[in-house]
Amino acid sequence: MIVKIVEKDDEVYEISDLVGELKKNSKIDESGAIFTFEGFVRGKEIKHIVLSTPNKKKTEEKLVSMIKAIEEKYDVYEISTVHYIGKFYTGDTLFILAVLGSHRGETLEAMNDAIEKIKYQLEFKKEEVSDNGTKIILAGG
Image 1 (cartoon, rainbow, N blue to C red):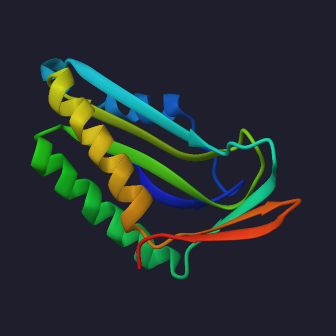
Image 2 (image 1 turned 30 degrees about the horizontal axis):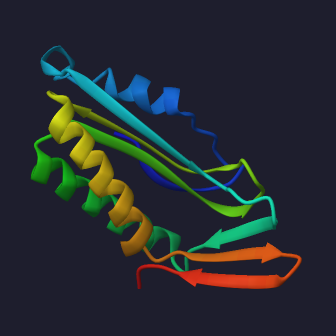
């Protein structure tokens, strides 16, 4: 299982890395679905964004706990995810996620739940910098 908060450019992960890790799971023979998600910077008016967290270790610990709870809730075999922090430009990857499950229904539900919880319940600060100034968005807390 890969579940990490990573400084941009310190480590590089692709969706294929997460899928490859999931396919090593001992339950792969019982599996019928892997769903993936990649969140990236959008906006032609945005110069860049800066994504940070006040305590990387604490945020990562909460992420691990959150992922374990989602795996149990939906009875999926494994979830891997990487969330980046740092300075990003349009098209840069912020967040990747892959979920392995026995059937598509619960696997898709687990993925959707993970996306929403990670977006809204982890303590991230996003600064969107544009020609009109800086907009600050806080999540979690």
